[in-house]
Image (cartoon, rainbow, N blue to C red; front, side):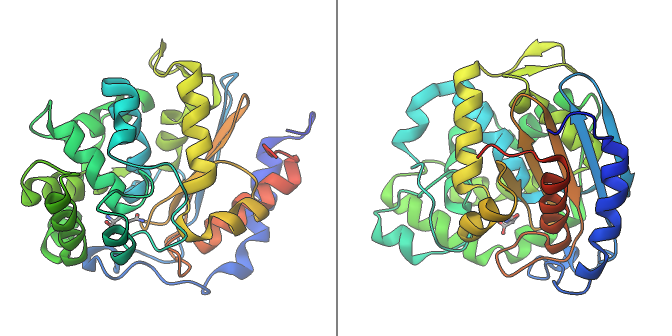
Length: 307
Ligand SMILES: NC(=O)CC[C@H](N)C(=O)O
């Protein structure tokens, strides 16, 4: 990041610059409970590896983490079984929407990467090998990394479980192919409950600090990922974290990032900082319109990029 810039000043400027972006997207409505979230919310938090914390707007308001949780679930699975994960899931960008079905059949039930829904369901299945409720493992892992107790929003979880027809189709296809081994309903319930974890921008930026700090969590005061794994997780975020808009996202923002249909986006500046942003209106790829613009402006103003 440009030396000498005040992150607080940058956040204030970003909050002004994103104003024209409101009203261009739409909150997720395929999960009925998410449709009612106030579309005008905007929060952003930056945590630096040197201990700085900077926030603006609704940065302390919990929102639905959704697919951002897939990053932490993957980290847990890789810590548990290492490279064996890659016998179940690929590491290539999919070029298709996060819940696309036909590519999966074409490719014999092996998901392209761990961040599309099929891949995340396979990761849930791996975690189910060792625990009954992987969603609680993921919740408590993110909670430990953020220094706070996190909750699962039961209404959001139930709303998604009731309507997860496409995800059930994906899971059934993989069960038939042997990519997942547990009962489809158990995998779906754990996955939907994991997605319904609520978190604020500040908590999320804190939780992701190991990705910026070579695997070390200053909040938990321990090494969470070996440094090689940290680099690999950032590589996966850069190439697969925003689904079929990953190329244009990298072009605009230039940072490893994970989006979720709750409107949150987490971005990493390796060696320097983590950035979490939240605003519920989504583009057609399922990423926050205002959040993407905020990250683009932040990267421009601070001159940060991995590229
Ligand atoms: N991109 C997302 O955040 C999608 C997560 C959502 N729970 C789903 O499975 O559809």
